[in-house]
Image 1 (tube, rainbow, N blue to C red):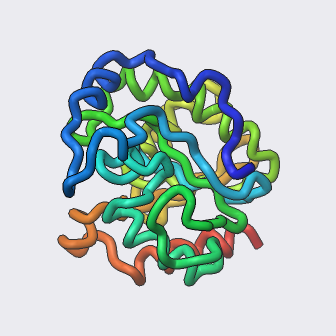
Image 2 (image 1 turned 90 degrees about the vertical axis):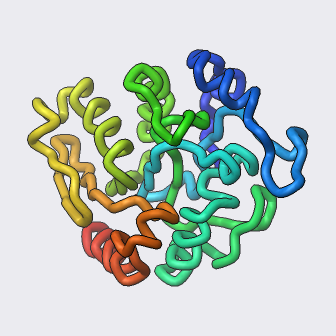
Length: 222
């Protein structure tokens, strides 16, 4: 088992905007609707992981198609070879949910489990999904470091930590690449620019930056 059993997530229809959007999404590259997962995407990885990477939401023709975070899109094509290089996975090539990928000391999930229009979840959609994210983090018993991939994931995590009394104000924990903040419960939150194709193409994110951040995570674990 590489996914936590989040009760009701598979059948979740709480956000009608997201349900409607997935229902009318046009498949890409001569695929059909039958090739698409088009539903909530569970996190996956090592259930004994000390590190959890939290992204924003499934990509339209990536995780929303394959049913596994960052699988089948540009963000994952950038990320997984570097995770492999850093020792967090068993293979560099990632194609589908049944390609044999195993994560080591890492669990990957998203702040919002369903595909949002324009990749922009609304505040109420973040809020509707936060209980699932909270349960995932609680069930990772060895968890020590959380990587917030992008500003949206970072903000949703902060709202969760605020509700748990771990921080008072969101402004106390600004987002930045490599920014670290130790929470009252011993967890460390580290910010990371998103590995989106746009960020890579514009030079906001590159291989060295991501590998250096993974080194930073290793240092925090030691």
